[in-house]
Image (cartoon, rainbow, N blue to C red; front, side, top):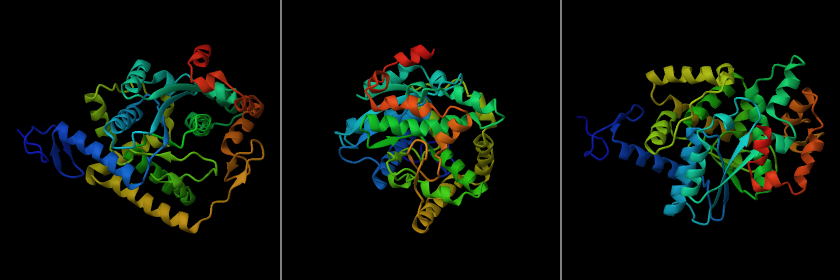
Length: 346
């Protein structure tokens, strides 16, 4: 029997190649939670009086994030007056995370156990169109914009809108170190140095929109594999179906490339993220971001036309601006976070 390197008492159940340790589950989970807490405190991700939105896709990362933040608040490791609101977004395409997500009752169960409010929203409510509407408009015109791009761009704007409607000060996402390492590689491969200005864990790194609600990533130093183990032993189900669009997403191949590199260098992901953080500081200190107001929607953007309006314009659906103006008035489905709009769409 191999004994746990940390406690020296229990049987080891997991070998962590990056540190050369054999850990029992108790020590592994304690170390993971300590890593998250250190990240929160080091970067001041959650402060007294914060209203934190937790973006929940239904996958293991966001559900583990929800569980850990709820536990930390209950234990007083983050301010007890921190308001936590979890929310999911229905993109309105057949393989949306909303439809594939782990059972909704699990999300509600975790929310109830931790005193977290849970709400659901949809692209249809926010934009007047679904991701499928936009993809059909684009693809019918020969524009092969990837579905992941459509969902990603619109989801980021939707999170900002939801955050403003509910007075959130920050939005927490479940990005792990695998996600962050992939982002570094994509930016390097694409020779997109300026993108590093928005890389990192700290809220001030997201500066593309002057009215942008800061995003925080408490799990960014945890490995995906360890999060999956944590989820399993804490009764959090893993997503059973993979979105078919992911197989043509550049990140998909990078995932396996990094896995091969990690076999020879167990700390490669940590090295990449450290490189990204260092480069981010250099870029932000030397490059002043140019902010414009989108000529269509008026949102602050680094371009004359923001990416959201660019997608709608190319799809021939720029009238979304008039449809979404309803958000300025009381909107039951948005403000209550009810499932009625989702039921109608289904």
